[in-house]
Length: 117
Image 1 (cartoon, one colour):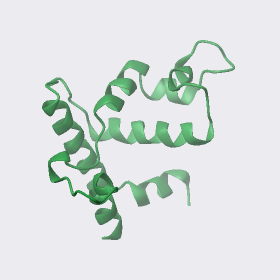
Image 2 (cartoon, one colour; image 1 turned 90 degrees about the vertical axis):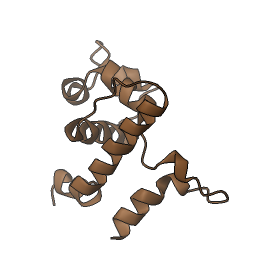
Image 3 (cartoon, one colour; image 1 turned 135 degrees about the vertical axis):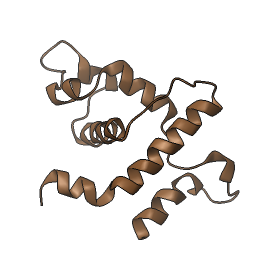
């Protein structure tokens, strides 16, 4: 399997749609109605997070640095740094209004349910 095929096993359109919906909802709750995020942006965002898990730099901003020993061309051509940070601010998997007290993983429940299905 290719890396993209493996990515799509975990992050199919249904999962990505939930991420888009919940991210937009979080932005609205925090009074930022300018959060217009697309499925393609969420996929790119997730890809950057996965890549940053094995290509570790001191801070996320260094993936967009101008120095060749820091900059990751794949990341910098995929998404602008400010857009990545903006999505990071509001990225959500689950609805905070559905808080289940005592369940430390309640924010991941929608993702776990989708992955089981």
